[in-house]
Length: 114
Length: 111
Image (cartoon, rainbow over all chains, first blue to last red):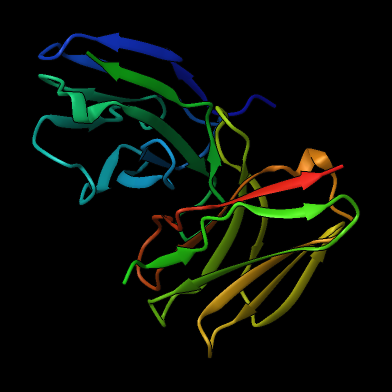
């Protein structure tokens, strides 16, 4: 079956621009996660959804970052007024259950802020 | 101390040898442990998960978990050039679902 998909795969934004990153999880997966990966580092947790409920947003670095999953499937990560330090790969992952199941990652969106 | 720590490497091993990777974690209550492989420019790909103390084998890969010493390791037997990648350990704490990753160990398998 289809895996996790993300779009766009690459995004170049001018500093101050708003961007929206989309994630399509594996069909039927209840849990959805967003991670940020800087060059040469491991992914860092941003936020977690269980169905449409955002249960953990402790990793969002500032109030410029906002995520939603209104119908419990597709999710969007929005970054307002982008800064150069937002340049990173944004990874989406999904899992079938609600307690510590394996997470499967999408291909990521590489964001470059100029 | 970071919640999960790995030696960044690179770990250079000859083809056919065993590559041994280690990861230590700080949350003693952690219950779920994962190894992911990440090729350059690609996303993490699950290799193995382990929940219980001891060894778990899957093909050429063996994961070892020691909760008393708070480390998890990965052995790659008969290493192949295609195993050259960054290996990420990830931990889920006792309460929660988020993965906490180590910084990754870069492995280079030389023909």
